[in-house]
Length: 147
Image (cartoon, rainbow, N blue to C red; front, side, top):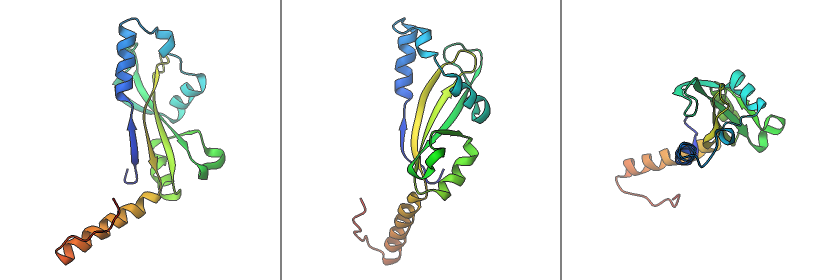
């Protein structure tokens, strides 16, 4: 997505947790604890993946995108389909997206990513593009102080 920024990836945390599970330091019931609300969100709003569940290996994982932000008001905390996010990103100034993977079979769930979306990023992109045009047209570097 064009306005995606401040991405946080939790894959290292996931690998550490799965290693603890395999070593017996953590029980399966501790990591397979998806709430009924999360499982329903995965069923109705989730995006299926080709990745097998790392715990039970029976089902493919489903990604659920939760949105939070001041402009969302009562809609904050709702699960949304991935296709809805670009429309919201052009409509709202800024909101945060949390991506959770869920297994429908064993209830494994883990936060895998979070990032910001919104049209506030368009202003920064436009500034960067204008600075690049100014440099290429003048033939020399101009200090803009945006970094």
